[in-house]
Length: 248
Image 1 (cartoon, rainbow, N blue to C red):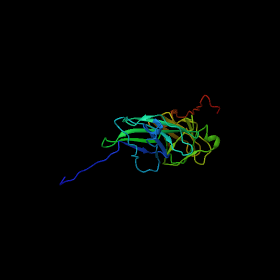
Image 2: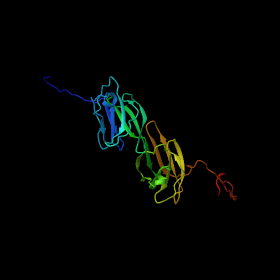
Image 3: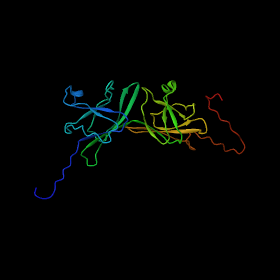
Image 4: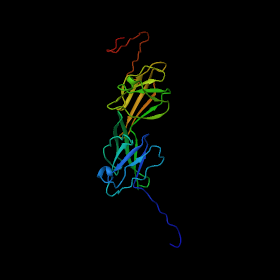
């Protein structure tokens, strides 16, 4: 070529983005984990890597299978179930049991802007968000109330949450208060009013779920957030209301 220029664009068929706080190991079909051969090493992806991992270059025409585990040189976790890296729009949850915890991670696969690369995003499946204006303490009743080791949740923050094995309920307390709310199921979508103590009468837990993420959002109490509303329209008649199972 005597004149002009040539523009060459290189791309990787797969990108992997680690949005968790854990160092993860990936095994791709064709690695020693799947085939017993040592033709490819397991790839380690630290959480502080600021760019996507482009090292996972397989043969897109043949399809690639992937598994994930928590990276630990002394005691690595078990591998997750296998999933295809080529299914665009795939969204699911990966479950890893490790150190008495049930680690849940969401996985979602989509195309890049130029439709040349498949982007595999791995993120925390359970997220807690605090919009109450107060610092909160989150407990798993079967675990934390015995050890008094709550998970602190600062105001206006997001944190990832990994429940204990077989745990589906949570209790919350305002910071500097010992009284905890009634347990609620953080896996079921919906809105739950949680009675608290002190100057704040209650907070609201909004649970929003998708195939690859469940967000538990704590917000301040507002009129109408209670599941039932009792209105006394009498001018001078006082009405006393009591639930059937309450002693007072």
